[in-house]
Image (cartoon, rainbow, N blue to C red; front, side, top):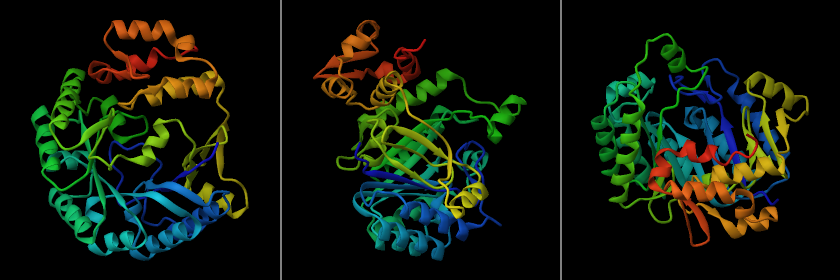
Amino acid sequence: MEVKSAYIHIPFCVRICTYCDFNKYFIQNQPVDTYLDCLITEMQQSEVRKLETVFVGGGTPTALDYQQLEKLLVAITDTFEIKGEFSFEANPDELTIEKVQLLKDYGVNRLSMGVQTFKPELLDILGRTHKTEDIYQSVANARQVGIPSISLDLMYHLPNQTLEDFQDSLEKALSMDIDHISSYGLILEPKTKFYNMYRKGQLKVPNEDIGEEMYEYLLERMEQSEMHQYEISNFGKVGHESEHNKVYWKNEGYYGFGAGASGYVNGERYNNVNPVNHYIKKVQNNERPLLDSTFPTETEQIEEEMFLGLRMNIGVDKDKFSQKFGKTLEEVYGQTIEDLIQRELLIDQNGHITMTERGKVIGNIVFEAFLLNV
């Protein structure tokens, strides 16, 4: 397996959002510089030097100050030759013109901004640090500096959010000079503030039907825009799809660097340790900063191929499936596919199995049908 992608994790935030379950820590009093030193060591000790895609995520990479950000960028570009997409996650209120210029100077060609909503009351509920005007300013800064590709994240099915609220946020996003939108429904993840509030009856989330309505509206509205859907939750102008995220959906290999990062290299799926101090200690002791690793069985690989591949509009390529596993898709899933086609949740066309619009709305039901170990 030739690995041509890497994910780099910066687990620090200026504020912890109420819904987020990623590996993240409030940045104040954290050993940020020591962490960066260890992250750089882990990257340099890897076998890879030439990469097609790099994605720096978090946490919030832009929570780093200017000097720390420059230190990270110098290390990434000194360690790797990046031939294609170089993405950075960013918070709108942290994207000063100086930081954006720095990112551009070191070859960052794609920004993924965590906007979530344009409604101030909902931004407060989510625990976001930015204001609506920061979104417009950060996009303007990125365009002024010449970042080639800008993506905004939007959320729906939020507490107290109406269909009209979501429609308004989507319209505002589409009115801006951006190239890509990722839009996800809220999932109440354990260990988040939202989850704890929900369990105590302190949080009211719209019912599932409203969530489905919001998603259906998203599909309809994006079809009228310049952006085309290429994955369940992702829409981009031609030439602006997230090449890095497509690596995940195609079930291809990638390195994961940093505390809590995961990777998939030479058949091994691995997760690094989460707590920053544990990660630092392992790297300083010249140990691999591993929490756990598994080698998925063929059955598990086949299931992953279906779950991930069906997320994309192009779907699962039948020829590639046969080459990869030495058996046809019909041999493994013939009856399942037939049943889902009958229910108008799947289509079999042009050598690909793809989900219908209805299939996308109730995607989890489709995915569950492809579990072999039940």
